[in-house]
Amino acid sequence: MKKILKDIIAEFHKDDLPEVFKRSIAIPKLPKNIRKAIVFIGMRRVGKTYLMYQHMKDALSKGLDKKKILYFNFEDDRLQSFSAKDFQTILDVYFELCPDYKFERFNFLF
Image (cartoon, rainbow, N blue to C red; front, side, top):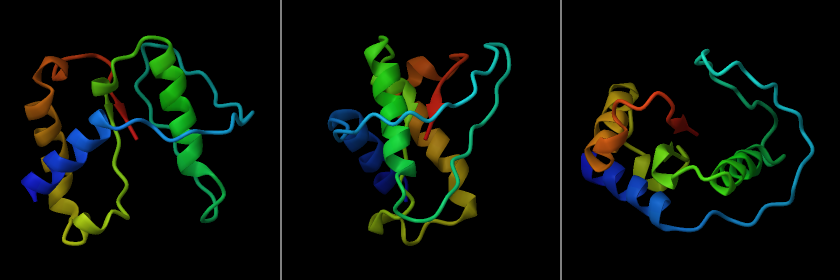
């Protein structure tokens, strides 16, 4: 599983993000000293993933290093054998590939 996770993370960091159509959905701004998750919920195929891509692109346009973003699509066929015990392995592999960001205050998980 570790090799698969490394491949997926490396591919995301290497490849360009898909083109998106700007959506005007307001996401509340959180104070910088609070670490919270924002959850996108909704029916299938309504644009949740592309809304995340839009936020990734916005952050990258403001100078964020793409390696500070960890993105996973759990519908990827390579993750068929993925189980709950593998969630920690995702972070372990990410910090192996990007050790400079292990102790960063803000990394972005999509």
